[in-house]
Length: 414
Image 1 (cartoon, helix red, strand yellow):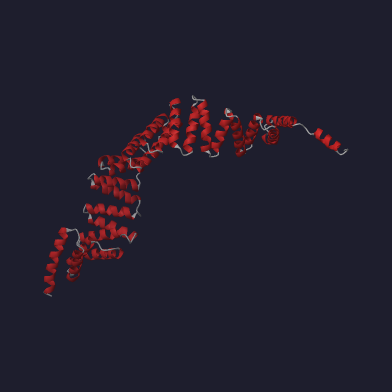
Image 2 (spheres, rainbow, N blue to C red):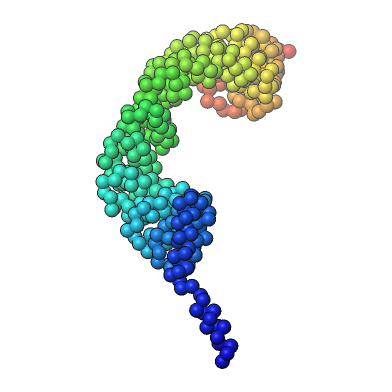
């Protein structure tokens, strides 16, 4: 039995768990007092290994993990502490904040809710709870705590915007707008957020409400060209041409870009002021001379004013820049015909035909040009092809039929 003696001596030398925990906690306290959190961690872990119910050690361990950047471990320790002691408010708040910071809002919701329930007059807790619900993808659930937060502090821009955003995500746009505007009244710097709401409303078909938000912003910020342009285009689409002109004139005054001038030109045209529209198109082309689409629009405007020579120059410049512009060739053909340059008109129509299917109007113009050049056989052929298309051009169909009869008589005499 003599072999038992060393074992008994060893057993007697082992420190009791309480001694281990006490020593570890003393070492940890010294490290924490020196703000050496990394050094404190192993001592606190040892203390918990000896006494898992020591809430102070667990709280300090969670804090030490947090201070050393090990947030997953801090979350684990705070979570264990809150599970063991649900009333540990400081630990629960730290846990909720860490979960939010680590993009785990759904897990944070229950903790903010518990904290808010325990402190019904605490605005910050209500706001944090609402934000967590919103970030967790539950805007409907976020509405009530946001409303409670607003009731506790009606001047909180964050609460007002949060509530507005939660309502907007449920497509309750009119309600959302009211809170956005309240926030903007308190802090004008956030007024631009109403533009985001207006854009979403517009996309969802609520154009009237969107227009009101745009116009409100435009009144406060007359130099915002993009907003003035959007107001003008909506008014244009709704047939309110005079108001559209006014808004788009402001847009051009703030930013005389080719796009803004083109939009104003369209408004002038619809308002019955074609000449001012054409002047804007001229300036737009000067601002963006390589835009073929703009140049063709300018040429079309000149054509409508019967300024054939100027229109022809613009059509020619368009097809020179982009030879596959069918509208450019067709416009050039028509202006050449009006200028009685029939060979040039036929050449332009030939280029147009190479690019796409023949249109009745182009074929009729070709027949007229051939007729003018006394190319009767060719004109007769073009007239007949035109008639075979059965176009919805009653006057031209009658005239083409009559010309075929006359040409037949002419050809019969040859």
